Amino acid sequence: MRGRSSRVVPVQEVQRASDRIWTVPNALSMLRLLGVPVFLWLVLVPEADGWALGLLMVSGVSDWLDGYLARRLDQRSSLGELLDPIADRLYILAVVVGLAMRDVIPWWVALLLPLRDLLLWGLVPFLRTRGYSALPVHFLGKAATFNLLYAFPLLLLGDGDGTVATLAQVFGWSFAFWGIGLYWWAGILYAWQVRVLLRNEPRGEPATDA
Image (cartoon, rainbow, N blue to C red; front, side):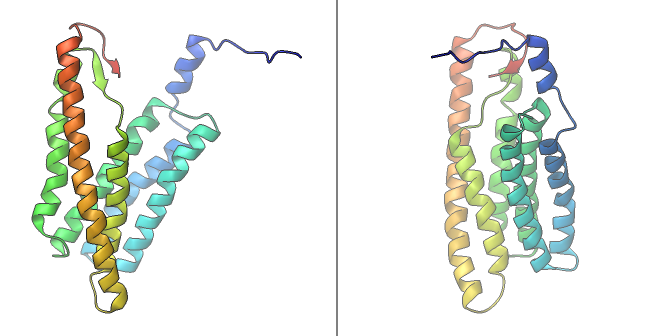
């Protein structure tokens, strides 16, 4: 049998691929970011909940699509790895702020999520002392984001009367409580990883991703 040939990819080629900006997945992520202020305007000004829910659905589909296309088209990039979680967090922040201002959710829920992110951002300077700019996203963090991105549209849908609104409230709060718990659990694991890294890694290395 003939063996399968392989090609050694030069370091420069890998570097160029990781530094690409204008890719299809990155364009989708940028469009998602542009949708954040539009969503807030729809929820707070005309209170067009149907359009706001539609925008969240489009954002969710594009979130899956940009990851799929990055793998399918071999268009992974450093910018894409940065834009995707930023877009997720900004959408979560926009949704909780919008729903809290509409009195759909209490303010303690709206404050719990950004508080966790602020605490983790405070660990970044400690990571840099060991040569890292970030740690990989834990699967619990992905599960938390999944739950939250389902929870808040359901809670928005539940801001009304009728059987559908009641069911949306029940399922929405179920997703919300699971999502908040997983979000903080992932944050605690992240903080523990940083503690282990600070204890075991020497200082003075150039900053990279872990």
